[in-house]
Length: 111
Image (cartoon, rainbow, N blue to C red; front, top):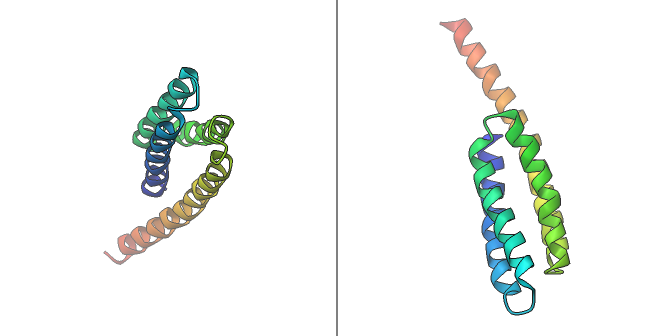
């Protein structure tokens, strides 16, 4: 879950960084600051996904990612797509970790 989740968060951070470039000519400075802070938080949250709080904080950041759509309207769609990727990373990641734990337990029994 950590690897998939971190990948989604870093990709979101980079995508938001490019959206900030789009917003520079049309939006006020507050939009640029908001986008920069969210982008930085997304990037930093990828590093704390080992803890349960990182998972919750990443989920909250998804809402802020979607809300950037008020500054760049296409981000409503992009944010929802990344929300789906985030949910898929959590679901598939947990299944992968459970399968790995089962294999490790099975290997421990054979030894």
